[in-house]
Image 1 (cartoon, rainbow, N blue to C red):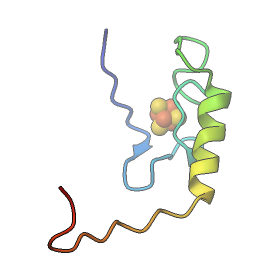
Image 2: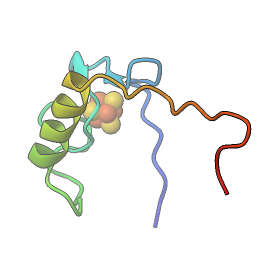
Image 3: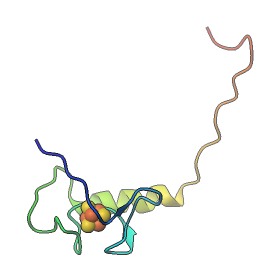
Image 4: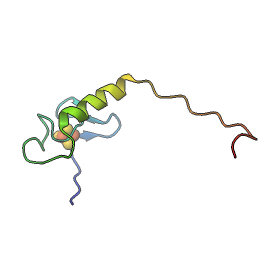
Length: 69
Ligand code: SF4
């Protein structure tokens, strides 16, 4: 197993500066396209990121004193 750090990755936006869209390693335009293998195809990972981006974050749970076990 190896690790990879991409110079095109913008961690603040989870975006690829090379493509101008979500970072999805192995997608067309990515430096890893065509030369790496992934357990989950890039199409599925891109779809999941687009779906997650459309879903507003959930409100954090409110915990009051006395709640819980
Ligand atoms: S999509 Fe590829 S080239 Fe772009 S930031 Fe992610 S790993 Fe790097």
